[in-house]
Image (tube, rainbow, N blue to C red; front, side, top):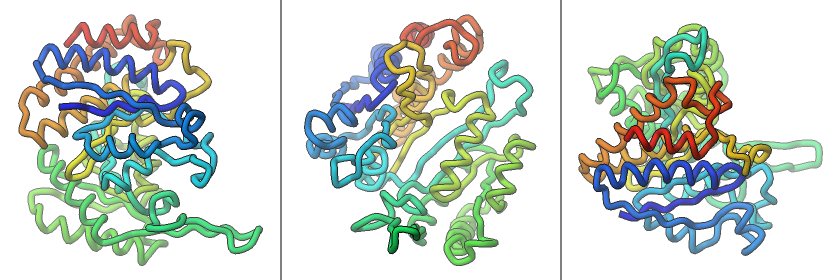
Length: 351
């Protein structure tokens, strides 16, 4: 099985190298038979080929069973018509990766004073207010005059149903509780549609408890009592914001894995950005991308009924936890002394 690797921008190449150090060890240890195909994207290909996502790379992505995507500097890209394609958004739409799955789990010693949590956010990934992915043609925001800007929010019953079903299926294997987050008190039609579809899906899972929460209240509840939540299902923008909040509350945005999953393909992608200010300094924490790759292995294990991949995913996650448990083997951003590559080597040694 060949995995497509797209290192991206900023710290992307170095945390991707660190991630592959860990994956190479797991590949050998569990005899997975995986191969890596690395291709350039982002600012590098913009300079070389005039686009951040060359067509041949997009075609490889369509064929790949799994993809590892490093951080991208989308804010620094030119407009799309000048080659600045949002690689992450393009993959999500073109590969039908409708579920952005983001767990947040606290670990002892990494967030002093923080309250225990173990939750996962299922975020709809292809529509909502995100202007680069909610239209068949053109963009989802525009200016009819120089002083007026409008944005369109797209919500469909199909995508609401799909993300709800994915969340409920996950809850069956966890603590059997789903919290649907919305703003239906204001967005009565669009979030009303979202809730309608979530409630329909809930009827298929009588063993799972459904509760509903308004997004602003939810933001406060994550601070006050995060331990009460199990699986959170929500739309694109709310999920983007709440998952960053939950990850930071659990210890750091750099400690949380993330995948973009569809029915046929999955992309591992770190939750954080490209941090160009520390690029090339061996200072970046690669934990998020490593855990995202473990989540990709877990998804592939289910898709291909491969127990070895499942064991590898579990082993990687356990090795990360053991390495983070001791201050001496942490990266500098969380109180340790290790650089990016030494930290990855420490994790690999525990697999």
